[in-house]
Image (cartoon, rainbow, N blue to C red; front, side):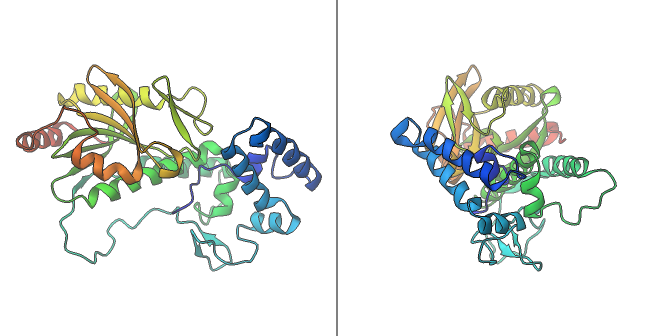
Length: 317
């Protein structure tokens, strides 16, 4: 699995800057270990993340290797490929637009540029953060990305999440159509609209780099910025697109990485025009084939008419 650029760095987990001394690092680890230990009121997940961070930078040798952007053995990590310079490529660069196919299976219809708006935003933010006029040879270099502020890394992670969703839908076959980076007017953009035999879905693809859970109808988690309301934001985006296209959605889906959501599928809320579900990425094909378990469905006889209307009315950002 490709590592998430949004996940907290070891320094962020330990709550110290990358310039902290070894003594400051040890003091931070000991304090957090007491707070996070399950026997002392902490959670097993927090303690696990703390131990992983300490393993990565807890010794001078490991820390030096991490700061160089490669493992302590100098070899490529299991989730990346070796770089010519000795580091690793985590796979964060844009995928090939037209990869060479090895099969003749019909693919879903794909419209728009999935992840494109967030890729452009990431590059703009990265260049501004590095400094105008300063050359950036590789904006996806792991060391550079990991040193960037969390909000910049999150934009890249979302772009990759959108690309992953489109890859999944594409493999579902010719009975499906996906539109990406759809203009939602003042509400920004809707990541995807997917039309298939089981209905029409408004989809948000996100990666906050940490576990998320549903509390009082909204997604919460350490990686979700204060003030961000994913469920409500998706609802507003879907409503804006529905007004423009005059086509109702069967349901709204927030797709997250498998490791970041304990339930496979859970309903977050229900509005007057459809429910919102949070779903693990690996379960998305099943949900799109069979629906999220609701009685509301767009029958197969409606798909062609709905597709024609969406083609006429959807605008892209």
